[in-house]
Length: 162
Image 1: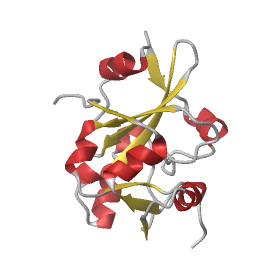
Image 2 (image 1 turned 135 degrees about the vertical axis):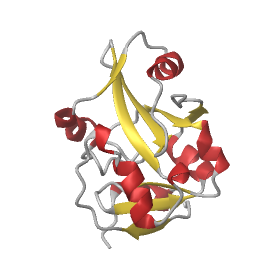
Image 3 (image 1 turned 30 degrees about the horizontal axis):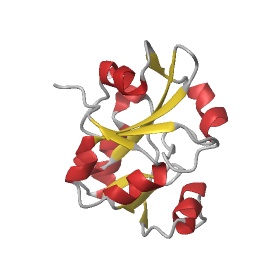
Image 4 (image 1 turned 60 degrees about the horizontal axis):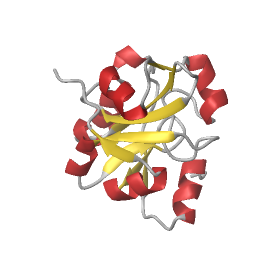
């Protein structure tokens, strides 16, 4: 298995992780529930499979948000934690240039630049979590605290209430 940038960073930080591969032929449109499909393919709890969503505010400042597959991000909460007036997901065609990753393979670890990162507090309820390894069809299994450390992330409530 070829090492991704996310894996190299975890290796450099001496953080333990596992990688898992799965068949990925999914449309990664935001409305399609790709993270839930990933959880199903891995036979893992969707509450512990985290999707990475890159957003920008009115000043074009970029932020990274991680949310479990069962929830959506509450934009009001995202605005509050990032001190933004407006916040929207970056367009798919901008994602690669900003992060070095494509939709469906976007890891919160190892982006082209270091962006402020926020992870939903539900991460702390899991013994381990799954995030994209940086390419489609590969996930990293990692302890929640190690993910927070590797991303230098803020843990906060991001969930949209049902």
